Image (cartoon, rainbow, N blue to C red):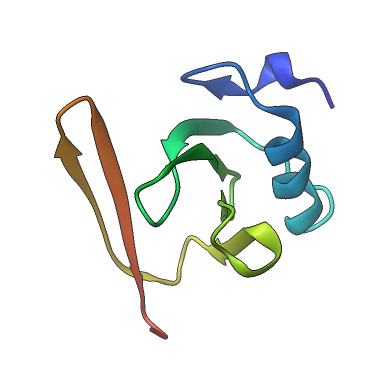
Length: 96
């Protein structure tokens, strides 16, 4: 799969992109991705949010195995907290 077909805000980092692809169900194509420069602890690190038709894969060094995948139907709430020069994407899942 070619990375040029994925819409993203910055060039896609290959290691994080491969982690997302490996964690997603077979056959699901990444439609778009958001490349970040902060990890979950607020420290500078590469992060990636990859979105498919059915799932979201969050790649961050703070997750166990470096990636967390969930279905679109699971969030109870999704919001964006804008910050100076950055933003946080916050997801609360129904199952906690």
